[in-house]
Each structure stands twice: as C-alpha cells, then as structure tokens.
Image (cartoon, rainbow, N blue to C red; front, side, top):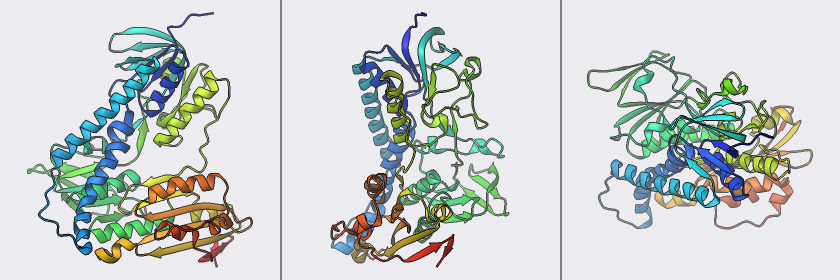
Length: 462
C-alpha cells in the first residue's frame, strides 16, 4: 500500500475548506490545507461579512432622518469612508485569526501557498516548489467575479473584490448586473451618499426571485433615488481626460461616472489548478463536475463549494464540507441537501425567501392558493417614510403544504432563517394558521393571513 504525506490535503482556505480540514484533523487525520491569499475565503475576506458591515454603515443616514419622528434631534453628521474601511479590515483580520486558530488547535498543517495538482495524488506547493502526496484531495477554491473580458474597457472597472477597499468613496457609480450582489451594492453605495445607477439586461432585477419581491424592491430603490435601467447593457467604457468613466449603453445612452462596477456573475476558481494533469473533469463554465457525494471522476479527489457551481452560498459550502467528512471519514455516506435553502438579499428593504416562487410553483402544481399582504411598517408611521412591507405565502391547494414564503421588509433575512425550518419540516398552511401571533411585529402577518388573496389554476390566476 502506498504511503502518503497526508491523509487529506485541502486546496482552499474558505469556509468549506477550513471546515473540512478542521473536522478531519480533529479526528486524528494528518491534514494540510493550502491557501494562497487569506484564510476565510470570499465570505469572510471579500464577501458576506464585509458586505453586511457596509450594509449597516449605509443604513445610518435613514436612521438619522427617521429619528426626528420619534422626538430625537440629531446634529450634524459626517461619514468617513476610510474609517469604515479600516474598521472592516480590523474585523476581517480578527476573523481570519480565528479560522487559523481553529485549524491549528485541531492539528491541521496550515500552508500559505498556492497548491497545484500534478497528478491524482500529488500536488506542488508553489511557494517552496515542493511536491507532496495525499491519499485524498479536497478542492475548495471557490470562485471570483467574472471580469467580463469581452467588454471594451473592462480593465477600467471594479468588481465586488475591489469595492470594499477603494481609496476614496466615488461621487457616482454605475453598477452592471441585476443579481443580489449588484442590488446589494447599489443600496450600499446609495446609502453612503453616492449617486448610483444600476443597469441590467433583464426586464426586472433579481430574475430568480418571486415577482412581487422583485417589483417591490425595484419600486423602493427608485423611490430612494437609485436609477435603474432595465433591458439595457454596457457596450463600452472609456476613460475621460478628467479620469472619469464615460459609458455607452446598447440603447445609446451615455453616462459619465466616477466608477463602474461589474457584478455580472461569478466564475469557479479552476484556472491553472492542474486539473488536466490529474484528469479531473470540468463543465463548460470551468466548474468541477461532482456526483451526489462531492466526488470527482478521479478516485480520491473531491470538490465542494462554489468551485462546483452547485449553489453559491457560504452555508452550502459548509454543509457540503460536513457531508464530505461524514462520507469519507465516518463511513456514513451523506449527500448534501440542496432543497429549500433560505436566502436573503441585504438590500434596503431586505428580501428574505425560502421555497418556490409563485411562478415556479404555478408550473409544478395544478392549483395554488396565494396569500399576500402589503402594508406600511409600524416604524414608518412616525418617521413618515413611505415604505412598504410585502409578505407572500404560496400554498399547494391539494394538500395545503406551504411551497414558498417571501418577505420584503425590515429583518426579512432573519425571518427567512426561521421560515426555512418550518418549510423543511413540511408545514402546511393550517400549521401557520394555528400558530399564535407575536404582537406587534411585522412577522405576525405570516400567521394571520387566513384567506387566500387569489388562486392559480393550471397556471392562470383566478
């Protein structure tokens, strides 16, 4: 039997890779994990965590305005972009330290280097040019924003990676894209006082979400002063004599802004990883192809997280890591469950959703009951802010099972997490109806909508 340097070698120090390496090492396995940038991956370093911190920062302007309606007098306010960037950096550095500490405590060997496959069980460590072997290799390298290299002037643009560390806050920005990253950053920049325009090729933003959530958020964003250009795309960006970006769109519009941000999807990190040398198969987008147990076509090589392009969410990568450990090291084959994943868009207002949209459910079920409520939240009654909360429950009429719940409003993401438990448990609308309301809350509306707003029969609203 061949002897290997490691029982498990993990490529990638993001959430999925770190969880896998830590759990395996804690079981007494000889584990090494290699990361060429910073431990914590996209989520901690340049994704979810700094984004949420910036979302909080961008909300204070409205909070100061709303305070007057509740009797507060707020004096002169001033925002310091560089102070926010520095505070963010301090926090993600702290979190990176915790990731490293967890690995070290478990007994994993932490390598600050790029690792490249040179064969089915062999890797080259770029920093030392050393070859190592492993009985099992886990690829968890994540993904990166698409640079959209076919776009003339793409090199003049930033992505979400650079947005967190701009040397100066721009006075104006154009964001290309209509997914949750584009929408969230549009709200962040606008909240920080930046003149913000969003451009998207589709008829409506957030194409995969329920139409009421999409339209409700669009209306709210426009009401705040964000310009949204749908059914249009950026054709070219050039740098003007003053250093600003001159943008031409497909419809012929010309915009001049300080920054252009591309949020046009993400790409798996598989380039120059040595996959060809090891014989690992990828799909046309470059994502690693895996089976239901995260196994590649090469025995002993596995992949999890965004590099597989299954579901690009941090908790999913962590879940896949735990399933990998169960399958490989505990002899309990466990397939990741990607059904009914709660999702939040940290826009302003937020979207929280779990399960099927009305449109998707109408294609899958003969008859639906749809419960919908729209109202002004209590906080807005004294602040005078013209905002609306929308809640929607999609139910299969045949057995009353709740297929999807969608919320637009304050703390919608928090609601989505708990709603995810209910839908995962297979709750029916009757279960919702017999649940006592918590008053006064916005969430109580979810258990007090007793009569359907309308029905859908064979795809047609009745």
